[in-house]
Amino acid sequence: MNNKDFADTSLKNLYSLKGRSAVVTGAAQGIGLSIAKRLAEAGANVVLTDLQEAAVKKAAEELAKEMGVKAIGVTHDVSDTARATEIAELTQKEFGSLDIWVNNAGIFPVMDALDIGDKEFDFLMNINFRGSFAGAREAAKLMQHNKNGGVIINMSSISGLKAATNSAHYVAAKHAIYGFTKAFARDLAPRNIRVLSVAPTLVDTPSVSALEHGSHFAEEALEHIRHSIPLGRAAYPDDIARVVLFAASDMAAFMTGSMLVVDGGDMVL
Image 1: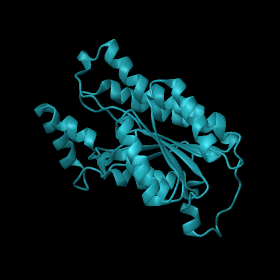
Image 2: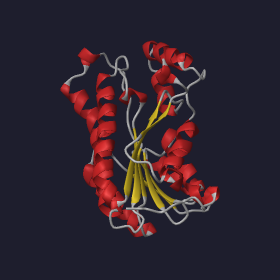
Image 3: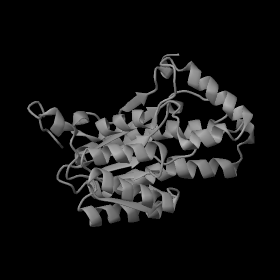
């Protein structure tokens, strides 16, 4: 367990991730890519994973060139739990350690509760919950042997704290993510592994844009959310990435099992 007192550590060094290695899932674009950029800017070597092979490889190449770190882009279907093991081992082999794992990949379908059949439910749960659970588990198996432990960050949502219309299975998955974050935090604390959850409100990403333009119903619903947020806008991907950087860094060294809400005031309503 890390008992270090950081009182005399400079702010620059508290945020530094130099010498550490991270995995970010769903990192070809949007929130995941923004997270990968911030972690790399802080000095971490990064494995970016995504279903979009060409896009994630290109993102990794550009990240390495821009930030001067090592970056690898690999294909990853998070519902394939065996792939999480392979990526964890790849990261350790290529970079020498696995220190940070960010479970960012997920989907956000809009469906009436009564239209969610077993097929739709299982598909979402395998990606949004089972994939995150497996990623955290496989990362922790390697992190427990690190001298300085590690950090696992699970992307939840304010839908993990309250209900949302026409997304019952999504809401269930995000509640589950917060639950297993707390349970993992308790189990892994003696191994010096911190586990945190980040809960955004609506974020303007390419995926949200595609959903918004996919139907008039979705467009109206998302526009209503966007304008109801007290700070007057949806989040930008980097709004989330900065909080993930904080959580991954020694700035948050005494935090585990918490949910960091990044919602522009959405939850006060």
